[in-house]
Image (cartoon, rainbow, N blue to C red; front, side, top):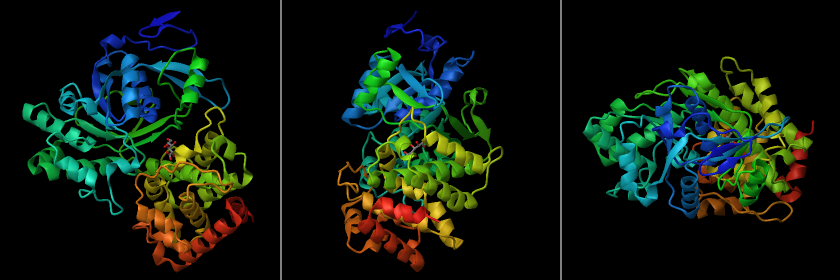
Length: 489
Ligand code: CS2
């Protein structure tokens, strides 16, 4: 039986790191250590560390949000020396559990932000990666960084900033002044051209703070784009009990996920990188076709499940996949709306990718949550669905499924499903004015919500009519009937 500090004896079925964690030093700092990071990037780095000669590529995890949840996570990860269990759940084989050992240091930035900035200035840190969600880049509908957003404007005035943009900019200042050199900034969020988006956000923040420093960052820091993929459900208190019972490990912060994993990265690292190509990562000169396929097929399908699904009373992804109308909706959306506008990247076949998606969603072993997928749709729809909506209208194709999805979104904002059951709305980027537009008696008013700014939907009177009719049907007949009419031949 293996002894793993601080857990003691570990059940034989649970895999433990094969490398000496005490010898591992952080070379990557990751900002905002969510479940997805711990199920994805941290796993690839764990694989890298298991190969000889890579002990300089451990992860320094940095919590950024100043809230009770993040603080509790920090305490747990610190108490567990950065270790946690990951349960991987294939559809057709038993779950497997492993300890992931790549996070070898953790700090909660709100405790001492100046210390976090100094830690990022350590010459050993050569990559700063981040998962701050789609909305976390403060980019408006025209692709501009929102300098006038209160959270950003306030941060720019602080001597020691709070946001990721501020922490990183100030760390880069220390590195420039000390002659340490830059690090790579690696966005791991679900955004097209996430490297470019990160570059815009970080450079705009830095330029507003100090134009000379911004010039240095622009000249020296690189921002590779990445496509990341692994379905990683949220972990509630019941999941913790279930996972710990399954593993036999008393883990305060276990994570679980599907067995599928994919990472495609642009090879543009200004300060070196780990040999990720040896552990399954694909490096390419252009991530664009990969990210377009992933965002417009997987993530958009998730929205297609999440918003109508919540209204129909479903809460679990694998449950809703038993509904043939929902499966038909996804199949039609993928084949008729998304795929005609996509270019398959080398080695990928869109029809096979679509079939694989349906299998991944049907995986009962992970039982992913629809509320997780529906949350923050105001940030997700512009990224996952807007290009397909614009392309569909531009080529004059049938926009019925898009009208249905956007109608479901507007209805979803009322906060209760068709059975009357309420749910908690998690829409941090919608204003009271947006919610009032969604609730207006005139169904088409919802198209004026900020989430649709720049989509040009109002320029297509036929779409406005279609949207109005669909919402009217939804309101009068309910989501199931509306969906049945939509997918019926
Ligand atoms: C989901 C993603 O949050 C969402 O809307 O679509 O978290 C999805 O599970 C991941 O991108 C899968 O890689």
